[in-house]
Image 1 (spheres, rainbow, N blue to C red):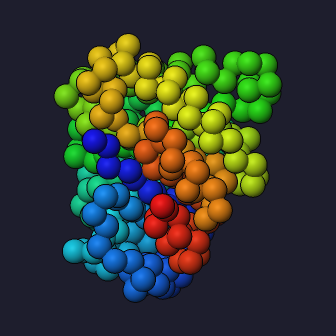
Image 2 (image 1 turned 180 degrees about the horizontal axis):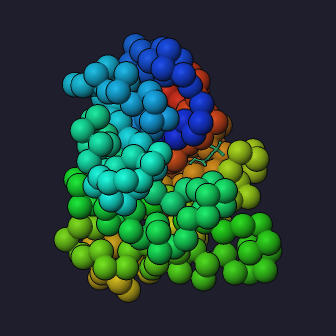
Image 3 (image 1 turned 135 degrees about the vertical axis):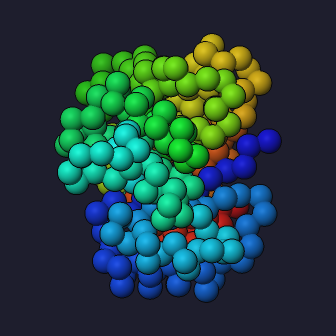
Length: 250
Ligand SMILES: O=C(CO)COP(=O)(O)O
C-alpha cells in the first residue's frame, strides 16, 4: 500500500527564526504518524537550522529545488550532495513556478530528478496544466507528457523513490482547487501512464500528490479519492494550525 505524503512547500517565505518557530509549533502538537508521512520544505537558508529540530521527530525534511551537478563552478546553485548533507530526504523538482519564472524545461527537470535519485534524495516532481490548456481540453495529454519527459532514463527499480505531484497551475495560490473528481481523473491518467512505462505493479506503488489551494476544509475529500496519495501544500503550510489539520486529514 502507498503511504500518503503530506508536504509543506514554504516557497520563498520564512526567515530562520520564523522557520524554527513554525517547526517547534508543529512538533508541539504532532503525535507519532503511523499511516502517513509529513515533511516540510523550507527555503535553503533555513534548512540547516530546521534539520536538527526534526531528528527523531515525525516530520521529515525536503528542499524546494536543486542543481543537477554534485559540485562545480555553478554560482548560486545548490547540489544534491549538499541537500543530503544538510539532512534532506526529499526535494521538489520542476515546480510550475520554476518552469514559469526560471525557464526550467522538461529536459532540465529530468536531469534534476535523476541527480536527486543518484544522491539518495527522493524527488517530488511537479506536473500540471495551465488554465488555457485545460480550457482547450489539453490538460491530460500535457500532464502525461510532462510525466513521461520527467522520467526519461529513470529505471524501474528507482521508481519507489519517486513522488509525482499533480499541481494544476490555475489552482496554485488562487483558492480555486480542482474538484476531487477532476483531480482523481488526472491522477488516474498519470497512474495509467506510469503503468504504460513501468507496468502496473510499479504504477500502483508510486505516490501521486495533489497540490493547488489545498486547505483544511478540502483536504478530507481530496484524500478520500483512490489515486490521491497526499498533498503538496503551499499557503496553508505556513501556519501551524492549518498545516497540522491538513496532516491530520481523516
Ligand atoms: O504550489 C503549491 C505547492 O507546491 C500550492 O500552493 P498553494 O497551496 O498556496 O496553492
